[in-house]
Length: 339
Image (cartoon, rainbow, N blue to C red):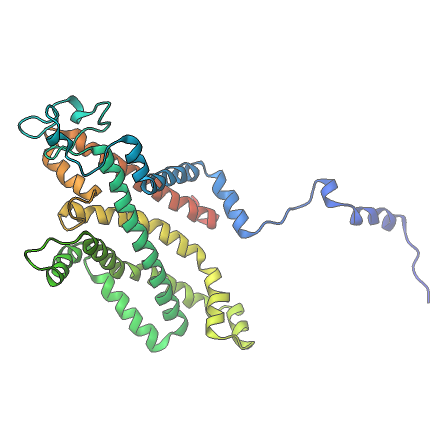
């Protein structure tokens, strides 16, 4: 048996094949999808700036007691009524710009004379805590119901689908305004004040019940398209249980819409909670709340526009920053959606 002689071309090609790619500088470094997403996100200056703003709001909410302690004020003390010379006979701050000074950075609340800065800081804490709890609950429930409906199909899909349609048909804001007083009337005696914890839990429960249907419908559609794919059929053929198919095959392909929907939903719940406070069915006194600051502000803006300015600008900055962050995360996960 004879072998063909080696040629000069083969000999010349062999070192190139065995050469170290790193030394040649032409190697393609492999990256995981997560690292690629993070790389795309870091290049988005708008997304990074929005993330910094959102992180600052969360830090302020977490460190509200520390900030108030360093500042030397709290959101409950009626400084204007306790200290003469701060409010006039009509209850408005005597000092210009809503009573802003070195002692009261953002001024005083008309009427009660509470410190606006600490009210704003603790109001961030209240609104964000409710929004985070509702976002987590709606996301978990929506994922469970949407994946179950799409994967099992049949009668289960029909029942869950009708429940989703019913919830989406509800006018959520109107339902919240009507339902919260009914719950409190059933649990609290007329001569008693509504506990703060009851109003807090009621808002979280009602927003969760009305909020999970949106993400459930989205994930149901995603699962319906994924369950017919080859990798899911292959997992079934090999004898994988439904739980293994869902957790190992379907959920890894659903993280992108789940994260994006949760990111976009949180600022909506911040606005919804503030709207309830503005309408008088949100958090009760004396709990600091953005919505109730708006309620007071619209009644006194003709004499003290400064009081309305601070919560309005704060909420505008937070909602815009979080929406921009959600858009940046969506583009980082799927750059084809970027325009």
